[in-house]
Amino acid sequence: MKFDSFTLISLIVLANLSVLCVSQDFDFFYFVQQWPGSYCDSKQSCCYPTTGKPAADFGIHGLWPNYKDGSYPSNCDPNNPFDQSEISDLTSSMQKNWPTLACPSGSGLKFWEHEWEKHGTCSESVLDQHAYFQTTLNLKRKVNVLQVLKSAGIQPNGEFYSLANIREAIQNGVGYSPWIECNVDTSGNSQLYQVYLCVDTSGSNLIECPVFPNGKCGSHIEFPTF
Ligand code: 5GP
Ligand code: 5GP
Image 1 (cartoon, protein in one colour):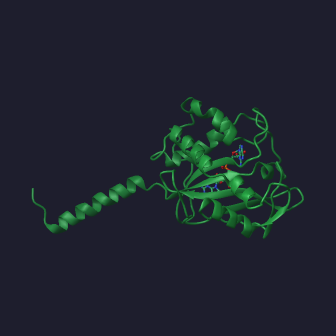
Image 2 (cartoon, protein in one colour):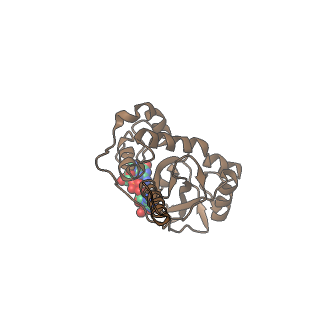
Image 3 (cartoon, helix red, strand yellow):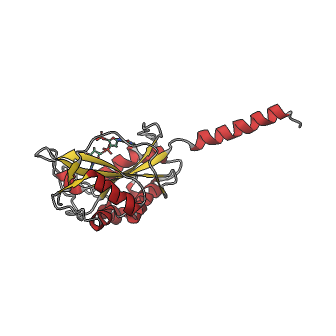
């Protein structure tokens, strides 16, 4: 069979486009960690998991597929529900690193189910359920935000720190600029709630964020104890 060059070029373009369409269901991940002290020190309050009070460390909130324009997909595959049996080998590490603080107290399964179904199913072309949770745990192990902050003299002691100093400490210690999300304590103070870092579509490598979420912190924010 012979093709003229126009047909050949069209075929090459089409082949590349179809590859793009299959692999491009999201552009990057937000890896989101929460400070338990700030989840608890707010109007909603918190409940410790049935497995006990979590460590005084950042916990995983989730690994969220996102688009470069700031929007994001969610609940992508109702046919791929959370299946506890697929991650039984990860349960104890999840309890430690991905604890739930919502009320009423739970083991974490509902939180993990929610994260898988809302966010994880949107990256299932790259990470199956086990890989999704394993990859997220690996990120937590690689990035010790609390250690980095403490090394810069920023401690969870109920004091206020400049947002710029917090960002700079994480930028210097982790190598990438974070997004900081604040919430408010029961007295109305802005406090360090969640730290967002960006990860490439493999889930393995930190990258600079293509876009930051919206939201506002005070210029000085509280870092509550836990
Ligand atoms: P909030 O409205 O409290 O900021 O976020 C509520 C939930 O919406 C989050 O826990 C998360 O599941 C989802 N969400 C909020 N912002 C983003 C975002 O920028 N990207 C993604 N993928 N999910 C988000
Ligand atoms: P997202 O905000 O990711 O959409 O979902 C958070 C959901 O998980 C909410 O329904 C919330 O009640 C539940 N959840 C359970 N445990 C936690 C927790 O420790 N932190 C946060 N942020 N949400 C939790």
